[in-house]
Length: 397
Image 1 (cartoon, rainbow, N blue to C red):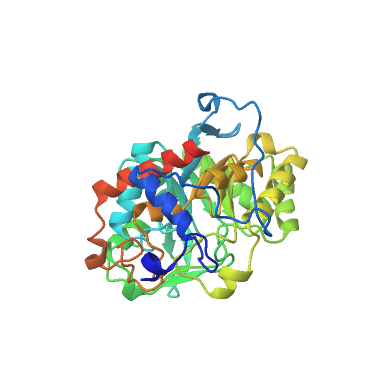
Image 2 (cartoon, rainbow, N blue to C red):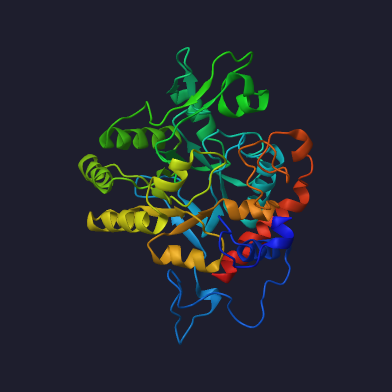
């Protein structure tokens, strides 16, 4: 009732996304007209109003390069990325039909699909380009080493997955915007055969909880991270390797820049995740009060890399409430080369912002593992809507 009858287009308290923002995404996903009448509903003199300054002499859209090459001097298999892609969302957080529709939409539209840290599921391998997110649990590239569920990196398992043709880049997850420095536990009772297959947990029965600790076991210093990047690049056959973080202490990112200079090893890309980013579930303190918002974090990463003379060979990918042409352009103007979008893609799938992601009762079948609910998500329809939304948003930018 709130979603359909009570909310105004731009009313206060409509978070994370206003009805107007969601409506634009729905319209573009369906290929419906997205124009509005009679001018802006926003208070252009209100605090926090943002706008873009236009040119008197605009260029043709055909003259704007819509793809970005990612891969530094040490990369043997550079990747051409779209300006807007699917951000990290794991199988488990999202249903199997949702993951499949996203990946098929990525194939149809020619953009990539980030797996999230839950490993490469069979639904991620539906034809679209994949960016494999390697988190602290080393799902798909690790093994459980003790009774508490601790995980260690496994080079052989990593090579097996990283060399798949569909895997185009590998992203080491240091932290995410919605819950930086927060780990997680998947109880053994919730591990299913499909989740085990995606995470590389082996055959059941599963008697040990599956842990995603707050930090990595494979490295503990900036220099060791650079060594890990080099190792993954070699094991993957020279594919682009990068890392993802929500910026916290600026001096720690400065230390990463020093390590790149000292070791002569640098990532091919860095993904900056803003504190305004989404998640299926996280404590309110982490969602509301930890980590830098995208604009501030992006300026630090772009500025530090530029000042250190490293920016030319490192592409910056940015994520954090990118959902329309203006938010995409604003993010590029702040220093990003490429953007990722998660919740916008969920809206394209049919999300109604019911805020039930953490209950397993998502009414649209997107953020649930309940087969009765996810059965209602029609993949052949939704893959078109994902591709339509991405193409219309890039065109609007």
